[in-house]
Length: 137
Image 1 (cartoon, rainbow, N blue to C red):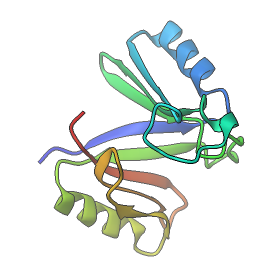
Image 2 (cartoon, rainbow, N blue to C red; image 1 turned 45 degrees about the horizontal axis):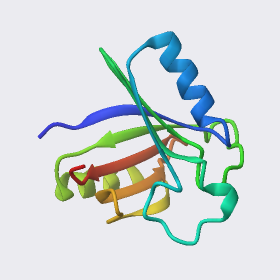
Image 3 (tube, rainbow, N blue to C red; image 1 turned 90 degrees about the vertical axis):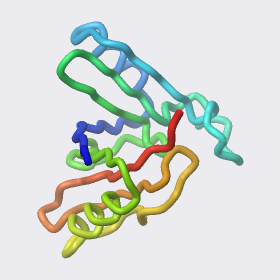
C-alpha cells in the first residue's frame, strides 16, 4: 500500500486568491471546488463561494487548501495540517487510531460524500492531521 503526505492550508475567505498566487509563483495545475459546487445542503448564502477544496499539483509536490467550513480566519497553528491519503479503509483506521492516541479527535473518521473514510485530529504533540481514503472522482 502507498500512503501519501500533503500539506493542507486553511484560510478564512481568501483561499482562491492565495492558491492562485501560489500557482503563479510555483506553477502547476490548480483545481478549485466551492462549497456551492458540493452536494452539501442548507449552506448560508455567504458560504456558497467559499473554497471547499483546492488542489495545486506541480512536479515534485502537491498543496491542498480550503477556506474552512465557517469562513472565519483560523488561529495561527490551526492553519496548517498534514494530510495522509490512504488506499484502504483499514489503512485509514490504523493511521487515524494510532495518531489520535493521546490526542484529540476533531472530526471522527467516517464516510463523506468525497471519501470512503475522512477524519481529522490533533495528535498528542499538537500537530493537526487529516486522514482520507478518497472515493474515485
